[in-house]
Length: 379
Image 1 (cartoon, rainbow, N blue to C red):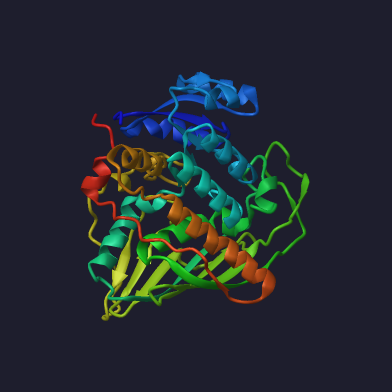
Image 2 (tube, rainbow, N blue to C red):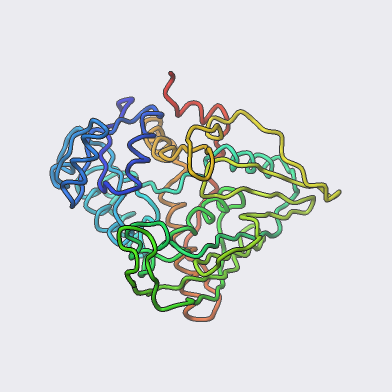
């Protein structure tokens, strides 16, 4: 197989700028074209980043394109990814891959029949901080993981996003929008989930947009906005996960894991970097010794402070896996297991009972310093 694959992007909204700007960091791939149902949006991105603007049909028929990145809204992820596979191209999707396990299994069948790969974000668990946490666990730093807590809570998305409607419709909500970061990292750190139980609610049936340009507009809420879940892992560990857009402030840490010999404090799984802390049986909490992981290095200024941002790493790893004939870390099996976890959480909230998962997966291979460096272009 060639050592570089051509990439096309469908969906030229806010998140597309991240893929366009960060893709050149990685070897094995080159973004060649983009498309959007809004032709002007595609043309604007094409001009900005020096690629070809095409219609969706033309991009899917483009022989130079090997992999298509699906950056459409969640409700469109399944039909667009299905069309990409049917056009004979590999798919890498933004999260969530699909909105139901049945949709995911249909994609799996098509991909298998056509010998194509499907991958999906989030890839933030490949970041330097989370891989340091993975190494510490693998090295026995806190003994066997027995339990943990996860919290991702805020007042909501309508305060900053220009078009927040889809966040509050089926397929949105904090568990499907933000949950993927936490679930993917838990699978990275602990492994697959066995069963889940949850309680769900919403604080209001409507939301008032306070961002521009639609300030003051009222939108409906059709999905739970507070989810409190309990995850039982195959390993025997149990972790609570609370995801909410009904909380104005709180003092909970993003992720804490507790083991037989200590505790581990993991930074926000929504980002690649951050400080990892741990304690032993002495209860003395200290930062882990920093390591020179390439996906933990600050590379981007942000209104909330400088950050390490290497989104597209999952796509680069999938492309390299295709070239090398190995398993991709953001694989279809792990993605579908994550979908199973999240949709089962919502089902549990609706039905008031524990749900046994029907899928499983392996932990992704750890991404150490050398493995991460191998994904980057040499400068």
